[in-house]
Length: 69
Image 1 (cartoon, rainbow, N blue to C red):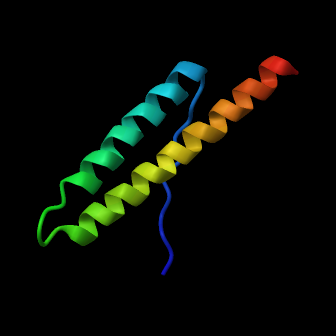
Image 2: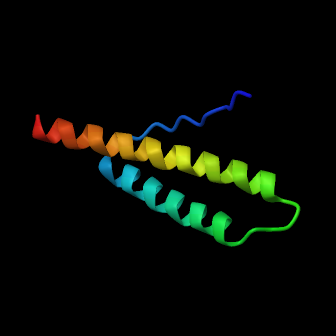
């Protein structure tokens, strides 16, 4: 099974930090408040938010390496 990914353009450190924070909050929300019958949907939403969190982390590392450079 292949999954679609969400690609978000991140142009600065503030955006990356904001996306990481929002993603962390949403992951916790869906994980801690399971709704009966919606497990598959919530699992997909968690996967999407984890992907966004990872993208923001990669962007932060990129910005950090550019400033050190």
